[in-house]
Length: 631
Ligand code: ADP
Ligand code: MG
Image 1: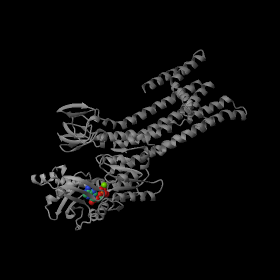
Image 2: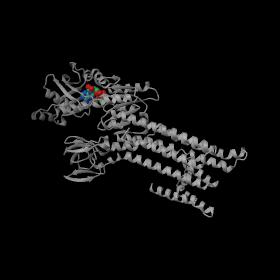
Image 3: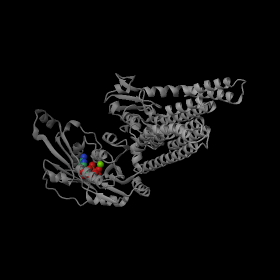
Image 4: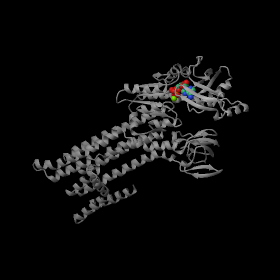
């Protein structure tokens, strides 16, 4: 960009010299004009020629080349230089704007770690994060980025999660806490056990997402590309007609006069203001959203957010905390302690929020070998085999391979009990009830309760205020709980006791019923509902801390756990669309006006130049407004 700037400065100085100093021979002035011209025009002429050989004749380089060479041909030297000079100033300005918004998005890219300090043979080794294996331990010192996802095994520290979540307050982490790559360690030294490969870590996922964002074009962008394709040849044809026909049929009309008009016409007609400022607005919108902890995977989704009519929410982990507290353990024929242990073992490998909560309540580490043949039945619960190892003696029996020492355990809801024909007693408690059966015998219940996120109520209120007509909640949980929660939050409609397939069916039905130009979003955490995320017009995943499948299936990822960010996303989308519309209307209005004036010969080529560059700069400045964090 520096090089471009120098060329423009030299060209401008020569231009002014040629313009203000009346040399004795006019050809001296003209030569200086030509040199000045070449400084700014060389690249454009070259590109125009190259594109012609490639068969892409009509582009803005072509328009500018024809307009300026034509101006020289009719003896309008200063105009020729001015057109090219100002065109280049406009281009430089655009490059600057694109660069700036790219940088703003790539401030997110700063999360890319350069190395990992891995502990091997008791020594610290600096390696490429991609070479670290699961289970190895890494050390992250103050000021360093966490390179790979893992669990803290030693040390406490404050970590900065700003790049991931937009949250400015540092978060405290200590032993056994999960830690995500992309955070920056602020003060303490942390020893982390790696739980994911670098390629599967949060940081890689996010980088991939951001890098691909600009490849998904919005309808407005596609329209402009298409528009420019037809528009330019049409303009050129009109200009040719304008240059030839009037002098032939109008008495006293001269070719030079009409060619001049045709050339001005070409100058104003350049569509660059639109071609650049519209993608730039979307780019800026995506950048501004990422500053708010909202990752949008493409301009098409940013555009769609503005016409959201219905938002469908998952309950657990989306509107509710998804962190359950165990409220009551009601065993049948065994102790509370035993029932909780058996349930915990069965849930050991599950990532479901319910499983996590049970494990938290149990709060002891279990021997993983005790569980096998785990099957998770989505929307119903878990079935697993647990080896009964209570003391040393029994352990030796196990070695002999006595299968009778294995128990089949079911943990889940009423549907699960019914599926396995367990005779059980329906619980009357309010809350999510887990039924447990051991070897086909009902053995008790565990009552857990989920909390509504503080943010959910505010979110639904704001979303409605922002023009979303309908909010719906889908859940696999019981009807009573679902209705209680939806009333509390202010959701319009609720469908409960759904299996994952049921959620997909409901979404298909909603999509069928909606109006064509209106959009439906689904907000979920990716646990059991990744297909629905993928199916909706816009899939919104809550929390980068949620399931990986969610980040992949979703179109928008909200890095924090706040549903109210959906509202922020809608606002950013609406603002982007408003700026896009402003730019289209403004650019087309000014251009048509100047086009008419120049065809009529009322304006000069100077005015045409200023109209073109002016519109470009104003539209670009307008687009740059999207980059701010504030909405
Ligand atoms: P939601 O639709 O609210 O996100 P899910 O579809 O994930 O809920 O689960 C629906 C119901 O299925 C839960 O309320 C619970 O009763 C049961 N369930 C699902 N997974 C498990 C599990 N791992 N352990 C016990 N119960 C489960
Ligand atoms: Mg769920």
